[in-house]
Image (cartoon, rainbow, N blue to C red; front, side, top):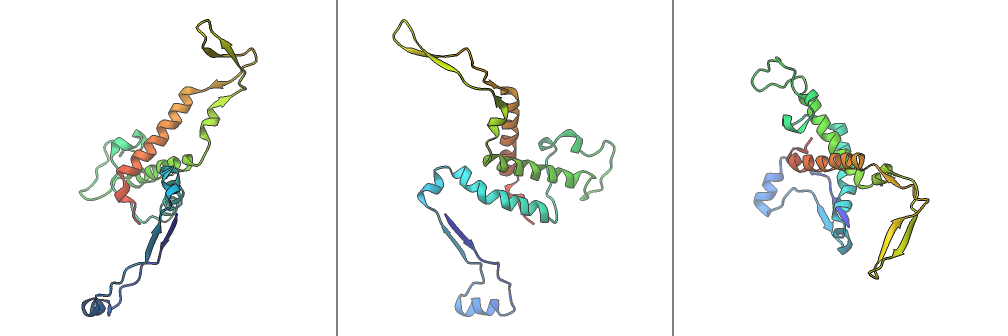
Length: 176
C-alpha cells in the first residue's frame, strides 16, 4: 500500500478566477495504491494508519463533540444538580471525549499487540490416546500446567470491541 496526501493548499484571491476561467481546482494531491495483500487482514493494515492519526488528534484537538452518556462510565456524567445553560457544556463534557478517544486508541493499539498471551500461563503437556472407536483424543498429560484467565481475557476483548464500536459511532467527529 502506498498513500500520499499532499498538503491542503491555501485558497488565494485568484483561485476563483482560475476555476471560472480554466476549471483549475485548488485541491490537495491524493494518490492511493492498494496492493492485493493489503486487504488480506485489512483491519490490521488500517490500524497502522488510524492509530497514529488518533494519537495526533488526541494530542492536538481543539474541541470535542457531544458524547452520549450511554457511552461513558457514570463518573463522567454531569454532576447531579449541575445546571447547564442552553448551548453550554457541563464540567465533564471534554472529559467524556478524552475518555472516548482513549478507548479508541486502546483498541487500535491492541490490534498490534499479543495481548492474549497476558491471560495465559504454564506449559502444555498433551498426550494422544487412541480410543476404542479408532479415533484419537488429545488429553492433558501429567506435567500440564497451562491455565487461561478466561474472564480477564473476555473483559479485555470487550474493551477492545467497545473501542472499535466507539470509533464507528464517532467517526464523523474525528476532526480538529
